[in-house]
Amino acid sequence: MAAGKNVLLGILAILLGLMVIAFPLISTFTLSVLAGLGVLFLGIWFLVQTFATWEDSMAASIAYLILGIIAIVAGIGLVGNILAFSFLASFILYMAGFFLLISGVLTLFTGDGGAAKGVGGLGIILGILYIILGSYAWNPIYLAMLIGIWLIISGIFQFFAPSGEPVADAAE
Image (cartoon, rainbow, N blue to C red; front, side, top):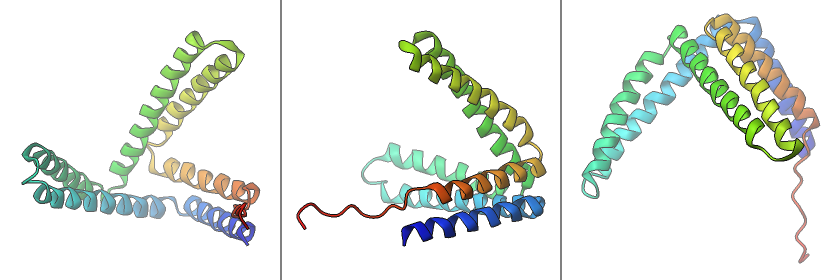
């Protein structure tokens, strides 16, 4: 039955990816609302933690308070703001690309053997690819295209994923 579940998830991911590509601004707006609400609720949780940890550690509760205020402000700023969401996605892609590029160069020059050199080269290639994708993510339409393509690729991979059947207990 799990193989059928994988096929269903694959079909849903492909359909969702096509919808995101077909309606890029609506999709990006929806994602910005969801991300903003998620960050807003995280900020509220941090504020609750401020009062829950006040008696145990005043320093931790002040840290929770500061994080809560920052998260609430960021969440409010992110809700429905397509450009802020695009900026955040682009920034994350740039940072990931930068770290992949640096770690690839380090692995290339410090790794032992051919496998390490291959991993280093792959890290460099992926880092450059992430930086290029980050430059396209500034535009909300391109960001929606990237998300849609990722969903379609994820859906296709679901067709080839192992079924995930539970392993029989040896005692049986």
